[in-house]
Length: 317
Image (cartoon, rainbow, N blue to C red; front, side, top):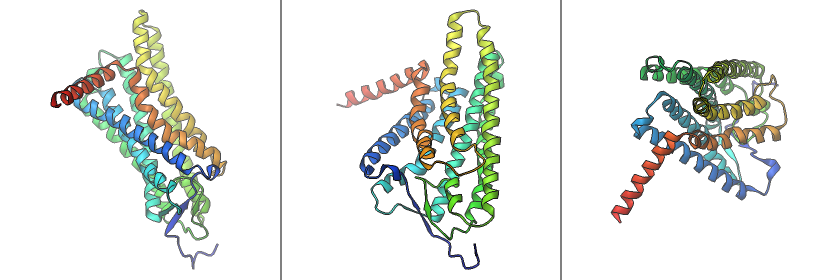
């Protein structure tokens, strides 16, 4: 391709869900409800864990970070998607597209690091309960969270900066409902696409497989320790502590491995879109319920907060 006279695109067209044409209003309502549920559920977790002093523990601190990630993850693309459902021209400006891609992967990669830290926190709490308060101090928690966010930033920034410089000359039609790097590389020109694809694959292997391996190893130690507990009630309590995190990890890793951990960006767009919906829309909605439905401390804090609010409203009336 001759790139000397290349006139770069100023905007992209997001195809969205071409397999579901004529269902824009239905999809708009469903996505809007899921988005509001995600904002409400994750926002409520952040508020409750900030206000209630009993929940100001390492586990809940990292859970708050996870809720911030889920809110950011969905807000990066959902509002634009909702607008596109009601618009005749589903366009997004070039720099908006690149920013969307960057923040999507920033929140996505950081989520893996936070989940790994939560696994390690669970390991310390169950396998070293006596040393746990001195090992997992508030300063250690802050440093671990900061390290996760910085690692997420540096994992994605170079790939996105290279993508910004690509000569998008031949087409501006993105076969996805958001600015995924894989979909952008399909319409980009120049030899750097292979480099960016290889870089993205390397980051995926490094982040996903390393965090998955670490989580598996940690849970082997956790399960071994739990099985050594003599009382059945103690075993049940320990398993209950890990069950929510293990459920979230299983769903997340399963969907992401299907989409990204491949050496080529080519594949079934319908299959990718369906699994992307699970990863990007359904999981952020499920996470608050998964983490709270089996957690008595969070449920008690929520009941008390709602009880105080109900009492205040009734008193004002």
